[in-house]
Length: 258
Image 1 (cartoon, rainbow, N blue to C red):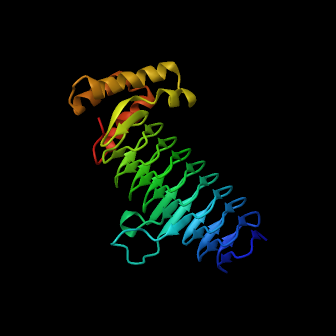
Image 2: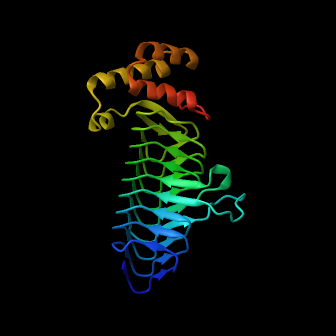
Image 3: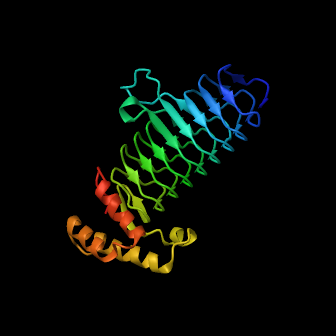
């Protein structure tokens, strides 16, 4: 049996692994699944349908699986899915999806969401993401792997944040942020590569140099974006890290910050 502290309220149809721990005055609703080793802190509320993996920590006062804050939502059965090894600090809010956005909000594994962060409906958050205090994702935002988002940052709906990028505290964007970028401001602009992050994640000097050259062609040399893409593709078609930038740009629907 899972460890359920006094004052906790747990639905009879919730599926809770025997090694999970539900702290004082937490509320676990219908259609909630909680994996092994997960800790649900005091006064946390989890509504379903929500599926939570193993070894997550909800430190306290966290709102998980609440209905989307979308006026078009009319009570449809939508979901929230959370992977493994995440930490959610105090007063984080994680909303379920909407039928118009695919019906599922997804959060990957090994992420850290600090106090008061908000992940809105239909967001897709990858792995090893760090969100500073009060960082906010509007609906339908896609955050790729190993992104750092500073405190008080705001990400507009339908925006995409590329892998290995760092988005400065207090910044806002309504445009997509390229992979590997260092972005800052309101509205955010790119100020170069997240060089420290790339080195920490094992990128070679040769690869970092190639990415930097691609950035200069795309952002600094005054080419039209179409021409810049062609030049980068012809020069670095055999460098997958650079081609990730090109594919990101081609798939962008809101346009990229430059």
